[in-house]
Length: 333
Image (cartoon, rainbow, N blue to C red; front, side, top):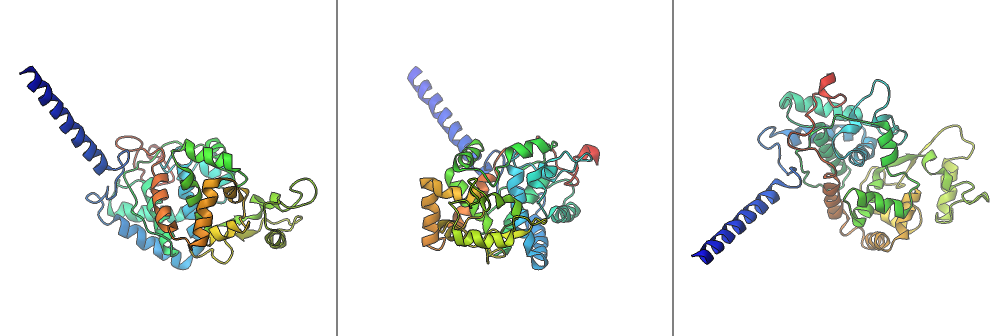
């Protein structure tokens, strides 16, 4: 009888664990799941896509900045919308030097206004930012992935945290790998998400250190293709008083494609952090594979890595809040 009771108890425990496991899987990661707003805001994704498509039709140059905005949000405090907050004293994340070139905040505000009209107080700004990033990528002929939702908005935005947590364009491979590892991301996520540079532009000031006097002898970075370096010097004169803009992926800035990997393989990456992908066996193998196979797995991989990034430091359940407007916490609205 004692043995029977022991076995019965064990069976009950196993059934409970199996039930808990299945429910956790259904709920997604940390409270996130695809279709979180299916009942509470059923037309959410249609609303976001409609506005995103309208914007891309007239201002496709905002695709890169809006995708980058999601990156910069997630890498500081997690994906909780803190990059969207304003500070009357200019001390918020968006006021940090690495974020001064971010554009498209008004687009997030426009989407939030439309969503609030349809579903007041339901959808977080953090989720809107994640969905917009996906939709502008798809609008540029890039991949489409299912976005997990259920994030809530943070209440803190600190300029210093952004300054010290965002990976700079001059980072080497060791810094890049550690930065991704610290956020629960893999080396593969690093090289895959770097492919987002295919629709980006940059100010000359982010890479001119590679063009002039790199080793103290008036030369360029030896890791940079000499012909490409010469073209960049023409666009970014050393004595120029203006900070010109340059395409990260020349000729492809308005199309999300795989040419970024071909350029890196040819030592034509704009940033030190791009060139650094050739300094690691795993990242180099991936980018060479994509360059040789015309990005055979890149679109699928990018969607998976964006989902992984979208899970960084999320607030769910009763954490944080659902902001009424994306630029201010509710207590100040």
